[in-house]
Image (cartoon, rainbow, N blue to C red; front, side, top):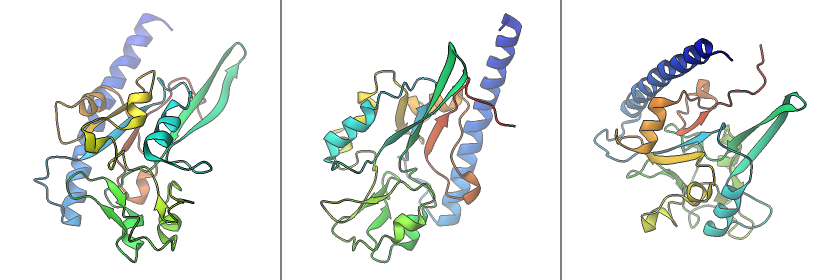
Length: 231
C-alpha cells in the first residue's frame, strides 16, 4: 500500500470514528429518554473488542471461567474464529467476541416473569439474580445474540456481567480485560469523556451487532481490517 492510500484510509477511519461516537451518544440519550432512564446517571459501562489486536488465545475465556466459577461445558465469553482469508502464505483469521451485549433495551429483561433479569440502575449492566430465576429459559429464547445459558450448578440463567459481582466489586477491571495479552479489550464508563473507552471509540471506527433490532448493545467491535470483503 502506498503512502497516499494509507493516509487516505487513516483519515477516513478517524472521520468514521468521530461520527461513530457522536451517533452512539445520540442513540444512547434517545433510548434512555424513551425508557425513562435517569439521564443524570454518571456511570454506564461498556466494552470494546478490537478484532485487529485479538489473537484468539482464549486467555479471556479462561480468566472469566476461573474468576466467576463458570462450570465446564458452558461459557460466558466465546472467541469465534473464522477464516482463513487470503491465500497462503498471506492468510489471516478473524477473531470475534460472543458475550452479553448489555443492551440498553434488553429483550431478556422484558420477558423475564420473575424480575431475575434486570438492568442495574447504577451501572447499566444487565444482570441476573440467580435466587429469583426459575429456569424458565424465556430470556434465553428472547436474546437475539444467543449468549445466555442455564448454569448446570445453580440451575439459573447465566451470562457475562462484566464481572460485576467479582472484579468490579474490588474496584478492578473485568477478568477478561486484565488477562488479554494484546490489550484487545477496553472496558470503561461511556459517560466519562476522559475514559480509555471513550478515547478508543473516538479514534477507532466500531460496529455493534444487530443494531436493526433496537437493542442498543454496549459491546462495540473494531472490525478486522484485512478480513474477507463480502459484496
